Length: 263
Image (cartoon, one colour):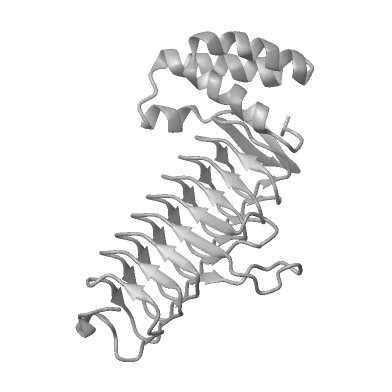
């Protein structure tokens, strides 16, 4: 339990079973339940609700009216003990909702480090989100979605349950994703989500040089523009992957893909 009561607003309600590092701050009228652990340097704003079991790492900032660690919105959920894990250095803005996992879906929702979850973002049960992502206002994930590192989801975008979004992908504003999106691919909202090239600008900002980006563009053309059946495109990508770790990541993603690929 917190040792320095000055860090806790007197109107906050913290269950005696919660474990907070000494320098955690908690704002007015926030509620922190049992089986919640919060690491050093984390700031909890006013009117935040955190339910457990939830583990939150260090140096996170959770803004007012966020709801973190609530029961999953799944009719099959029957009160079983499930978990939410959040890493370090995340920013969780106003009215964000993040649900715990389900007993039948793996038991945990997991979010990595250094993510920006902007206002009204929703992350449903059993999702796995990597690190360094940006979810713009009203972006939403249905249950069991996997999102890789450095993904950007623009405002009002959404991903269907059980879909995967590969690292460095860009999901455009209002784009609704109903299949798997390979790494590096940029999706646009045109009646339904469709691929529109690679996220080359984002890759440049992250230090990808011209040769790496050219290799990824070649892989994109093979997968999306050559008119090849998926099996044949995958075979060509495997050959390209011999000289490119980036293309190898695309091949690995395709091997793990269980839903229809967004083509």
